[in-house]
Structure formats: C-alpha cells, structure tokens
Length: 314
Image 1 (cartoon, rainbow, N blue to C red):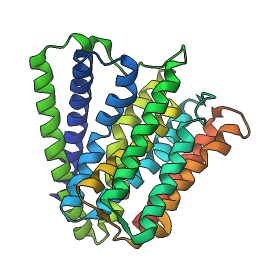
Image 2 (cartoon, one colour):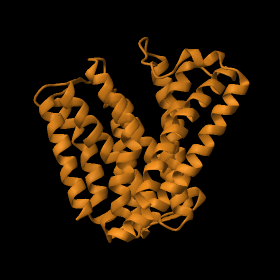
Image 3 (spheres, helix red, strand yellow):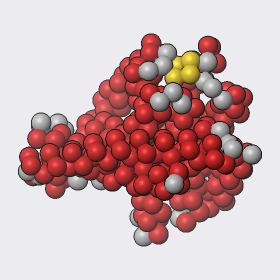
Image 4 (cartoon, one colour):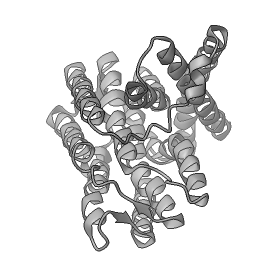
C-alpha cells in the first residue's frame, strides 16, 4: 500500500506541477509581466512547487528528514542523474556565461545551508528568510543582467498561453492545487510507511525515492530533447533549479516551520555529496574539453550518482 501511495503521490505532483506552471504563465501574461521575468521567476517558482509542497507537508508532520532529504537528494539527482544521463545520450555544449552568476550563487547557497544546519542543527525561520531574500536579490541581478543580452533563451515560456481564458486558468489552478496538495500528502505518508516497513530511515527514502521521483519530469524532458539532438538542457537552468530548491523550498518551509536535523547522515555525508556534485561542474566544464560535457563526463556523473544512492540506502 505504501508503494502505491508513493506512485500515486508522484503522479499527482507531476500533473499538479504541470497545470500550475501553465496557469502561472497564463496569469502572468494577463498581468502584463514581461516574458523575460516570467521565464526567470514565475516558471522557476512554479516548477519548484512539488518539492515545496512535499517539504512543507513533511515539516508539518514532524518528519524534517524528508523535508531536507527531498531537497538535498533532488539537487544531487539534477546533476548526477539528469545531467549525467543526458550527456551520455548527447554531449552538451556549455554556455560560457554559466559560471558568472549561477554557479557561484549555487555554491554560496550550498555552503550557507551547511553553515545554518551545522550551527545548531536547525534551519530557523530567520535563516529561511535570509535564504529566500538572497534568492530575490539574485533574481533581480539575473534579470538586469539578462536584459543587457540580445540573445535570450525563453523557449520554456509558451506564447500561446497569453490568450488563455479566465475559466481555463481557474480550472488549471484548481487541478494544480489539488494535485500538489494530495500528491504531497500521499507521497509523504507513503514514504513514512515504506521506511517503517523495510526498516530504513525516512531520510534514506526521501534522498533517493522521493528525490528521483521529483526529478523525473526534468529527466524525461531532457532525455527526449537529447534523443532528438536538440539542445537538451541549459546547465544554467539546471543550476538555477538547485538554487531554487535551497532558497525557495527550504527557505519558505523553514519560515512556515523550522526544520530540524534528525539524521546524522545529513551533516556527516550527504550534504557534502550535494556540495561536491555542484563543485565538480567547474573542472568538468574546463577539463579536458573546454565548455563541453562529454559522454565520458556524463558517465562519471552518473556513476557517482549510483554510488551515492547505494551508500544512502545501506
């Protein structure tokens, strides 16, 4: 029954997240928000909604390990699983701009999260607010920087949504809200039951099963694009997703209810896995082929991710 709850929960999160993104973009067009701002803020926040709902639900139910494991595991999966598999299918050319803003911010957020958790083993409301405000400042800088560029990749913003009827937007919002609410509720309950029944921790389930589940939509889209020999993913967007996971998902969750570190693995091993997966991107981008994630590099990332999952479940 617990496995069924997890599967249904993940499916509802995928459906709910998709409808929320559509509704959010359509509403943004109605309020005359520019396409640039929609792409960099509205879409990013909406696509982080499944992780956010899962983390809030977990924190409210008193299983902080799932709230933390969800984000830490998702950040590792985004690089090790999504980037690794996509590069294995089709090598990725990397934008020279990716390390100017996104990568340094990811490292800053990662070390900031480690410091906040290491300090007193609690991510407090104040610390959550600091993370979230840092994200807002970062987005303002990012938008100003992007306005100066002539070439902007805004393919993720669907122009056809600009003419969506109010009734359809309302229905999408309703489906999105219900999907995210019940999806997060059943996923957390299923994960707790599964962890109890097979004798492993809530954290181990969250950092593997839940994290992979919430990364499935991005993985599927990236693989399909790679198979079609299109530009599979933007490394900048992938890093941006990880920044949002830390700053908005954990930040907002901590503001609603402080997150307590319960599993010793969080601070002893897994948060270092997250930091290392982020840090390794710089040498991978520059050595040996500059600005390219080759199949060999993809294999290295994917292999490292398999090792991480095995160690997390042992």
